[in-house]
Amino acid sequence: MVLQAQEGRLTTSAVRVLVTTAVPAERDAVAGAFPDGTTEVRLPAGTLLRTAGGYDLLAAGVGPALAAAGTATALTAAALEGRPYALVVSAGIAGGFQPEAPLGSLVVADEITAADLGAETAEGFVPVTGLGFGTVSHRPPNSLVRVIVAATGARPGTVLTVSTVTGTAPRAAALRVRHPQALAEAMEGFGVAEAAAAHGVPVLEIRAVSNAVGPRDRAAWRIGDALAALTAAFGKLAPALESWNPHDHR
Image 1: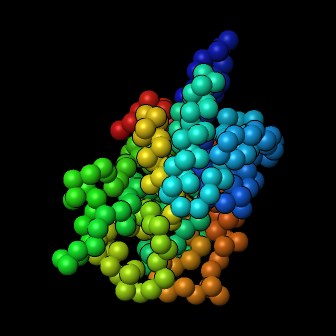
Image 2: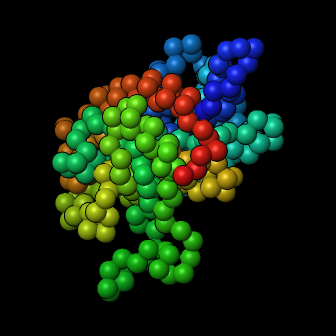
């Protein structure tokens, strides 16, 4: 967002932000950062929760396909209204690679990467780009990542998008070998980023770590703590974005 002079004072320009989560619990955690409450807006992809501050919150579903479809629907609807979004944020909880991303910590993506989009070969995994197709990563604007890190204390690094959540130590180790800068894995960021890129809108991904990437130990999960961290993050993120110029895509 940018500040503009109006009648001798500074006001926040009318910039809209779309926040896409997987499930309603994550969406509602984000909504908790906006004390003035929300109103419901119906879309084919689901129900948006609209805040007074220009944030629209959408629980699009689990996985990159639903995330992309829901995000694209919301972006298209906003464009047809003549009120396009200036930023798309993929948000929610995630698994964190240990010890770099401990439970309860925040991660902001400086790279959003599809970790399992490609082919398994006798020589190992080949990303789809190695097959001559598409892309496997998107980079949020560095200027925006810096703003979020400064405001929330989030750790910057790669956030992986997977269609199958990691549940074993060997797979976790293999992902770390292929993606040594990875801090977390989730299931929606790349889909959200693909939709945002198709509309020419910058993207951000922010995650609160609820569990460790590796063997599934439900007793050790801290979903409540992660959702609380997500609420706190957006309480700091929204004011911080007022200093960010959405046209600065560096």
